[in-house]
Image 1 (cartoon, rainbow, N blue to C red):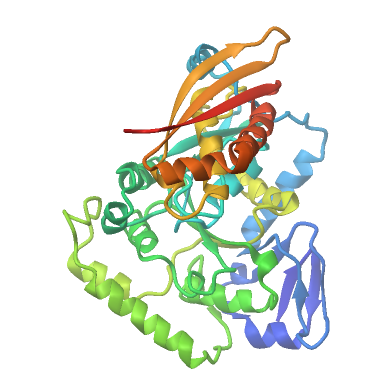
Image 2: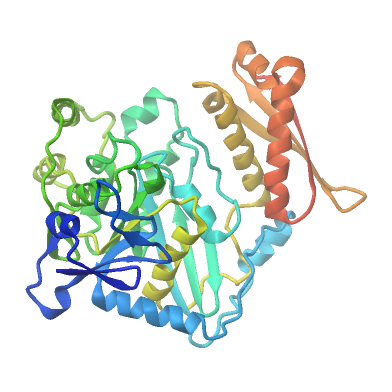
Amino acid sequence: MALRVCGRFFRDSAVLSRRLAVSTRQESASWFLTAGNAACSRGGGNGFIFTPACFITSEAFLSRLMKGKAAEADGNIYRLPASVPPDSGEQLSLLLKHPDQPENSKVLKVAIIGAPNAGKSTLSNQLLGRKVFAVSKKVHTTRSRALGVLTEEYTQIILLDTPGLTTPSKVKRHQLEKSLLVDPWNTVKEADLMVVMVDVADKWMSSRLDFEVLKCLAQHPDIPAVLVLNKVDLVKAKDRLLDITAQLTCGVVNGRKMRIRPVIKPPWAEKRSERASEDEENAAPEDGSEPTSALSKEQLKTLRNQQGWPHFKDVFMLSSVDREDVDTLKSYFMVAAKPGSWQYHSEVLTDQSPEEVCTNIIREKLLEYLPQEVPYSMTQSVELWQDGEDGELDISVKLYTKKETHMRMVIGTAGQMVARIAREASEDLSRVYLREVRLKLSVKLKK
């Protein structure tokens, strides 16, 4: 067996041949483990070392991808990432502007879904080249569906960044917005391609796909889906990624079986898996907790017993904070795009208003630096938005807290916390609006 790794044939690796055997019923059924500029070699006791940005795909798609890379190297003009106009009227005009598409235009709508905190917004920001979506280590940073537009040469990729798929009971328990329930499901209906992100550094989340994600995939079997294993840089034993791939794909990728040596799980892992299944079985619907589900009870029961999804077209292994890794996925999108009319002018970066971008970035900082439920219970109000005398943008935002103790936390000792949040948010916003931003934050108790 030979695998195509990093553009070379890597033969007779004892570990690879032992761990990954692929069915070759047809001539085109040979599989490739491909990496952008990644290096692969024998190494140490593990026998197999590879860096991120790998993906498992068919030979046919690899050929299309390499042709796309060759065309890109043939002198195409690089288009700088777009930015967000600081004026809401200008942004609205840009959104309504007729697309400046070429004759041979291509388009692809990509819905990025997954459990909360899988890295969806981080990936979207890296693909777009600018930080327009809020990112933090806490769950539910993205509270509603947002759209990003990546335009390069003849191709427009529309990224549909969604909130993490969650349940009505969690929304009710944590007093979250209803948009977290509705937006992801509505967004997927628009998509040409679904990207399912999984945090492989989280041992609980990487053992099986989130049940809400499985429901979403099952309701839209006609929409192609790819699996993205994120944060692989945090996984020390890289060959473990093959086991995760087998679990999350049910051992099938693009209709072909993968045979991977089974792993002997520790007792605690088995117990946890059983407990998770019992919890899902016993989770009683609240207020019609399946409002968007068109699946029968039998289908739902089958999904609860599944660890993964056997209909993924391709599998990526990457770190969404690494530019080279993300470029591999971006190239994949460019090749997968179909002939069609652009929906937006090439200067459009997002459909969010400048004020929405601002409040989302501030929320990111609040989530990053404030404990527990404090940032989730806060609201914001833009009090001032105007051009300064020297061309800078002056913004004043009032933060409302529900408790006096929360207000003291936000302000911090001698005002240090609120000053830090304002300073860091200003720096991020300056890079989005391409001009200096002076942000002033004030805190008030909401009565």
